[in-house]
Length: 360
Image 1 (cartoon, one colour):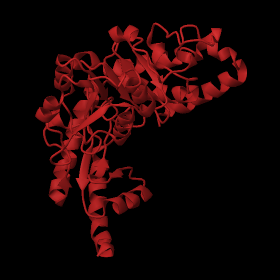
Image 2 (cartoon, helix red, strand yellow):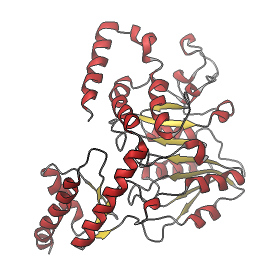
Image 3 (tube, one colour):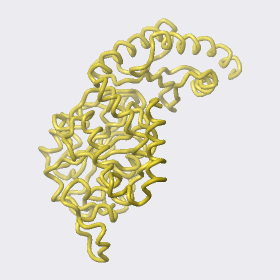
Image 4 (cartoon, rainbow, N blue to C red):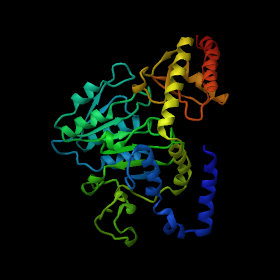
């Protein structure tokens, strides 16, 4: 947690206590876009193009609800390594008539680009892909996927959760129609602060069924009639914004913008390479791409009893996590020292024999 976040949360409490409902017209109402602009500075979006939502589930559901799934063009293309939330939501659309095509992974770590491109055809309405795969940190060529989608008349939503804040990116250059993400990972923003980018020229054409009073052109008129969507990105909001989460999230976004993702990426590539070198010396299998351009900010180590090792590491305040079918994810960020990388590998080496004996 950034040190300044505590002050932000105190500011929220003081504002609530002193201004009460007046706080809405004194800044709270605009926070989903004002805070979204900080995300925009990280992902290359223009001012007003990003709105804050509680999480990726809501953001992706909002995107999915912009389309009808009963026509001839009802195909969704995704991949087997997409984050489970996205896959759950896409398969739920099958009940509405969608046909979901899941491109398999041959190695459980990467997704063949040629297969992704080949799966996108004239029946495809939406393509859903993660920029960086959560299990392996494999970087997908979203720009190439977006180009193919548009050639076939389809839309594309990119999940930036595992890349924004550590891998330089620009949603305009990538060509995505939508982008989603959250703040728990590289953005140091905590829970409850997801985000949604929608290409500006699409706003007037899209009317999401996942909606609410905040998305209305005249929300405080409280009109009990058909929805009249806001003309700007507010049309992609729904219910009352989670104001405390937005206060908490701002500091992390500010810090990432102050440091700069290019500088973070330079350090990340050096430290992830160091981690892989140390893992090689220790004889650990690495489930992360070796090439810089194919690797995000995480190194996944496939060792025996990985879940139990992670529990022991957490007891010693070494913060890593475990993903089934992948291994131990080690994620150095801009604040991580080289010594800490040495320590985590050393501790895994120390724990491994004892846990292997227990397992036997």
